[in-house]
Image 1 (cartoon, protein in one colour):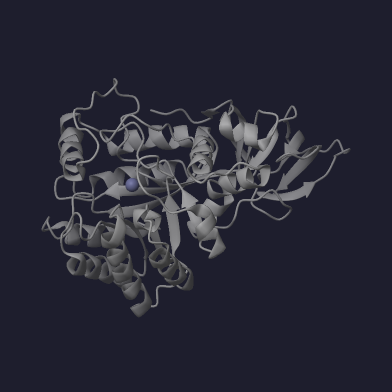
Image 2 (spheres, protein in one colour):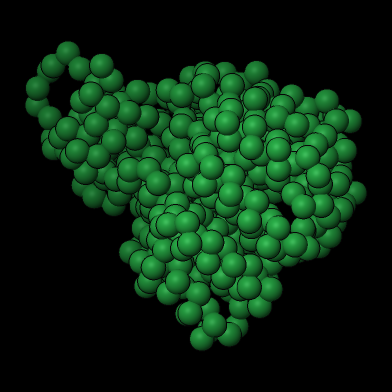
Length: 398
Ligand SMILES: [Zn+2]
């Protein structure tokens, strides 16, 4: 079951060798002389990297497969973007299952074997988006593992009925409780955080909260979040996505927050944005904080950017954080691969004997070259099973 011999690959920037996967795990990395019965793939000298991790996206939102969407809503007005999206989803007749299949398969074709998707739960769409994404997760289980987050995109306290839907979503099987700007969107940090923590506690689930609030407002919401995590004994069960407030100039304030995040083993997810303050990965790493990255929504009503490629995202992580040396480029890759998996509470993807047989063969002369040029993917393997060739998954998108 799921045995595979890959010949003539280079582990990161290493010399050519062969790699054997047995029973879904890496069993041997050494030049191979035996002519066994295990299926063989010729890597042709490609670089092997651990499989990529898309730790923050929205599979129910992408307009992939639609004619190009002309956007009238500029950046900067969060509520206008939220309202526009909710209306357009209905107007365009988007099918969350079809859209999430297209998005997840494109991401998997680029080499991701793990995806965490926030899924809109609101009083317009109800649980329809979650049903669609969960159907995709089930269909693609052999290609990519998909975690779902029940996400109150249109607010919680400002939208009566949403809390009940979130309760239903967690009962239905959403993996995590979501949240969104307790002050900025809901204008009721106590109400918002008390509600999402009560629901998470009731269902025994972790939390992944979007926190775009900047500066001192974001720091306040973060502290309120950490207070509740501490009181409920949720060490290691919280992710804070974006966490723009950690990019504020007051370093003494940021250091104090980082100490608390580390003590509660809170994971931070950053897209390494070009247009916002952002957590600095070296500073987080110095505190031993788990870090993941993600493309966030791609080609949706929020904007035209993104394609689901986590190797391209590694380049943005490097650019945003001034990573330049080969060693630093490995760190950028790790945040988008094995480290991202750990941030999601999963086993680290790494190219060592005993590790999961999840890897990607990438063209290019060196890892840094592969990242900056996000070079073509020759082969994607999940647990010893080939899932994509030359950028296309073996399962076709609808
Ligand atoms: Zn998001």
